[in-house]
Image (cartoon, rainbow over all chains, first blue to last red):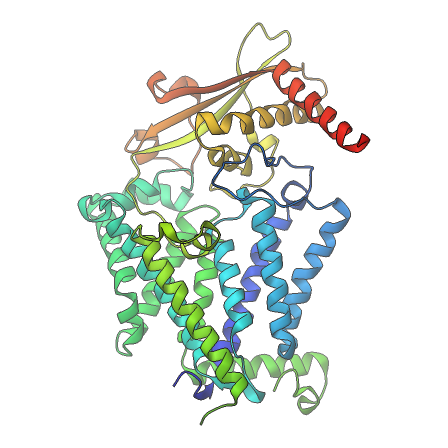
Length: 288
Length: 196
């Protein structure tokens, strides 16, 4: 049953990891904050933006940039250490991610939209009681989100013109462009076309088969291994796409064994207690 | 064990929301979600990455003519004007140019960018002559071209001299009078708003 109570260590771990990947992604962009968020950089005006796009949000004055960065840091700390305020901070994270996209679409990619969707679902999720127990739908919803992402991506490859079925060199053509890293260049020189074809159909099969491969316990370890390798491959072959790989890899904690997730959560709690040199029972509210 | 009403309520909300999102995502990838409002489609059509084979890799080359430069076009390195390399090996400004869209829709965006580049150039290279004219070229490099299919390293756009002329299209040429006029008009409208 959707609201049947279960161990939510995996869900708890997911919200920590997912939020942390958002903070890392934002930190990367904040390295160029003045160009991205303020009028020091070039920004399209409402008149010059493409008609299909939403008019840009107002830019920040320079003095407000540290407040924006602090908002992300505060949200991260709260999600890590004070989960009882989680819903409030996920709403803040939605606002921060939405602003990032609205102020400058040129520095926000599909992953920014995925963060907005993810934080929205986290904000409306029922969450957990003490000791991270709560409705099983928490975990299922985000597992379904990952599997849907894979499945519809595969479906779009099949229905979006059919190139992935008609041609054997689709991945090879993608490896050549302005995302091409040194490793991709090396592969282009040394991997025969048959190798590129194997990668292409392996990726397509994985994406279309993900709902089944991840749901069946016998194929799940193989699916997890392949999926992580797939995202690692994207990260090393395509410049600047590592942030997307990192975001997708965050979902994989939802497929850990419950015992493993519980051990990681317990370990993190113990480390925190050691770090703060406080008795665990005194922190039971924030870290049961 | 069944948890309380509050948990049931939020469980149902989450269940229906993720259900609608999944339906929207499937409709979107099948091209059936056109009746869904754009604001919602933005968040359901998020995963259609690399759906097609690439036949050409296209990118912009921005060139400038300088005062006293005897009409010679010189290529501007967009990396000098943008520190954000978030678009593969290209910069955020390359993405702005790609997003600007068709020659018709993108002309205003390119005009604004030309003004920005000229002003930034004057600030970054004070000893350089003033920019008099800027042009935007679109290079479309077919896949399989030796420099792309058997590269010696990461992406570096080939020099325009090394590129066959049929790969290059001139998208727009903008004179300094055009961007200064636009800037003046904007300043005047801003002044009018302030006066009102």
